[in-house]
Image (cartoon, rainbow, N blue to C red):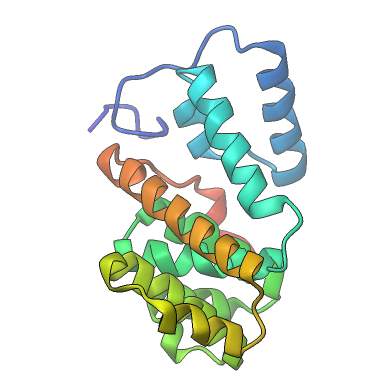
Length: 191
């Protein structure tokens, strides 16, 4: 573990200095909108190409047009992260679920056990699919996709569910391997 408790990870990978102008503007935008620069961005900032790849994929999956709402995508992030026990993502995306839903209990349920949450059939099917993809990807089959179609998900929606779940499986592993630390601010948000 690094000796600096405020470092974004346990690795000694300092941010690029100076940050490129576009990156500095992006970090300023984050600070303005979120009140902080998320530690995941600070962690990737040792290599601007890696940061840009990460943010490009994240922004596409989590913010671009989709048949999935922003809340649904955050719910997938939390369920995957809960299964993987990724501290960073459980905290950061749990805060997002609380904020987007206006329901602190839903955010907590997503982190602890989504099956205990008051979910509609569509949400339950979506999260069951994401959970199975996380726990047993080799066992995915047509029945899993059909369960999503049965509750109204389109073919594109199924792609998006799979992509969000897969992205967070990857990022959870990087966060866990580097001891990525959530920003303190996340803990008190939307409670």
